Length: 229
Image (tube, rainbow, N blue to C red; front, side, top):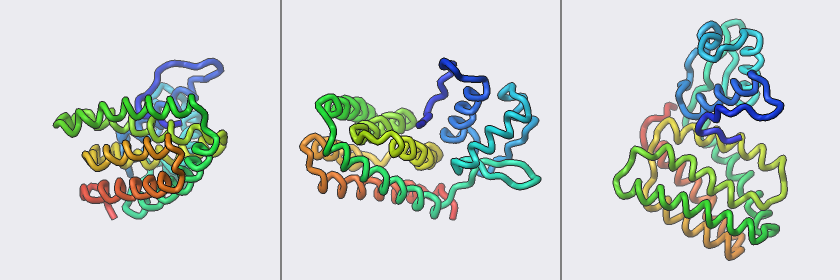
């Protein structure tokens, strides 16, 4: 899914509810709707121009993705964040992404390699600007970071794995969007190394680097002091 900028297009077969679901989800992932914020149905009805019944259905769907919490008779709220929650979702990301990476390195073709190189080229351009002092584009880095990591595992030929990974990655990225802080040159260097290891089909080294890369990202996010216990 991976929604970092709400796409207002209406795709074939989509309902207004589908579009609103994407918009709600993007608002949560982007941090426009804050962790713990009460999702008052009257306010949402006005904001998203949707019936209360449909909104309840969408919020229940987002509850199943752990982006929204149901409070029984008290309604819904945006899922809270925590240090333990970040660590948990990072470990799940590692489990899924390393599995997909192994399969991609085994099965990926030349088109896959080209996509990895292209995605890294775009990511590296943004990282160069941020390291150079333009910290206002960290939100753009989040998108390019997603695209690069997605490209490295897209050759796995496992649609169900990719779908679950995408949902998990969104929950991980929500923490990045809330702190909007880039780890700097070390992260950029790791992306270069990961690109090269993937293209050279050095599976075990790539898995080790990816795991360390994600753990370092968690440490950086927690180091901002913005994530509650």
